[in-house]
Image (cartoon, helix red, strand yellow):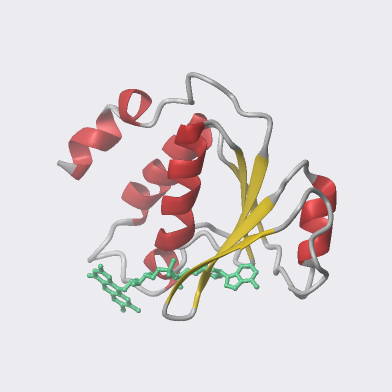
Length: 134
Ligand SMILES: Cc1cc2nc3c(=O)[nH]c(=O)nc-3n(C[C@H](O)[C@H](O)[C@H](O)COP(=O)(O)OP(=O)(O)OC[C@H]3O[C@@H](n4cnc5c(N)ncnc54)[C@H](O)[C@@H]3O)c2cc1C
């Protein structure tokens, strides 16, 4: 099933029919961040995913051994998201290399989203007035 979806990525992970005039920053390119990015992009948001590691995927890339999850499968999935229009900025540690306020300042974003301990956490803030807390 997963292989079929990846082989038909353009059909299952197509860019949205309608673009919204809002952007969202997602912190963390693990499964939680990638899922959020996918559904937000599907709705038409312009989405940028930030991750401190050099490659997207989170634990799937850095924790699960390739004999359990071949890297090429994962990379195909990330490429499909990329072609959907999701932007990836890797090697950026939010709170260290960049602060949340910088993300908000750089985009027309009204929201940033990051997976939190024990679940997902959404932080909504009014246009360009995000707090400086990472
Ligand atoms: C050995 C192993 C085997 C597993 N096997 C399975 C399995 O078979 N099936 C299964 O369903 N699950 C499995 N899991 C669990 C699965 O990997 C996790 O549930 C899943 O990765 C959690 O996703 P996540 O997005 O919440 O977190 P993560 O995958 O940890 O992703 C979080 C991402 O956020 C980034 N990040 C964090 N803080 C910042 C910051 N300040 N700035 C920028 N980036 C940041 C990190 O670099 C990371 O890439 C396994 C886990 C391990 C370790």
